[in-house]
Image (cartoon, rainbow, N blue to C red; front, side, top):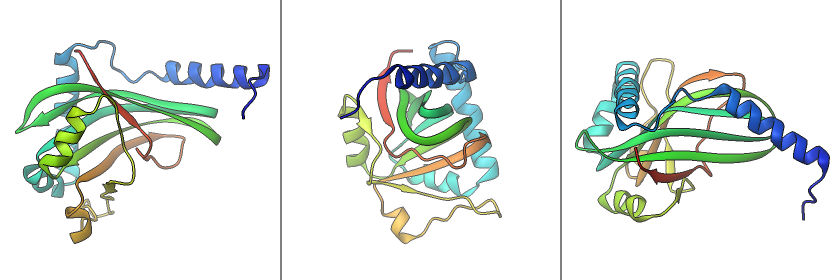
Length: 185
């Protein structure tokens, strides 16, 4: 059982302040701003990883988080806002949040998209009051040539995640353990 000490409290407050200081660029919960950022993120994704266009056309729906900010110093977290699109139309807005603990220091920003490859996976996501990314999410990894490592196993997965546009000082980005919650724009 973890005991709350002054040192742990100060470390958590510092990580929280670091995350806040980074800001994820979403100053408003307004749907128009989120949609504009989602459009921009999708343009970047489709231009740099053309395979994702085909992936999107086969998906029942796509959740796009155009900018997620992650920071940590012992304790850490990540936060961002995005939109769920079905047939290229925004149907809901979501926030994403994650908390971390362990050896970490730094900050980064990245975008990610979740491609729901089955109606059942999309329906489970939409019905959930707070859906967490776990073992059912398969990652499509970008290669140097701008294509994604999508094989038969990946395509048969109910949810495919693509993390892109990374910038910052923390190595790697993963969405495992990230919680998604529907928000009002």
